[in-house]
Image 1 (tube, rainbow, N blue to C red):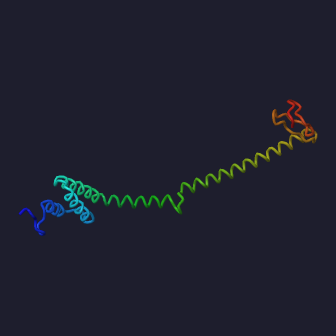
Image 2: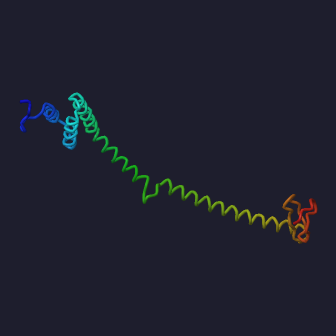
Image 3: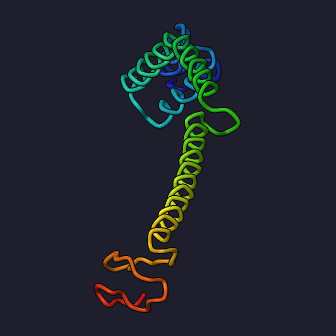
Length: 158
């Protein structure tokens, strides 16, 4: 009289079983059924339980429909990763490293060539002054005798 026997199910349990008989992904089914039962135990209305079921089923269908797309995207992402990253270093980083190394070598070569040009210019200038070595003032650039202690033009100490 008002009490249910152990074999009878409550209307909520019957409705949950009815909902769970509909097609849905088997990996989600046991968790969803348990969640729906917990909702019924906590006093949620059947409307709320059905709404939760419909939302979960819709999300599950959405994911299942796009599963092939996700697998394809994952494979493509893996191929892109393999194409651009090898040994933990991206090809761009490798190329950039080579570029920076070549720039450094070019700079070193230019500095060495510049130093050689300066030496040759000093030799040419010194030969034009009866073989007397000459120095240049760091302030004004005037050519001075190597024995001079001060610039002939501006007086800066050489």
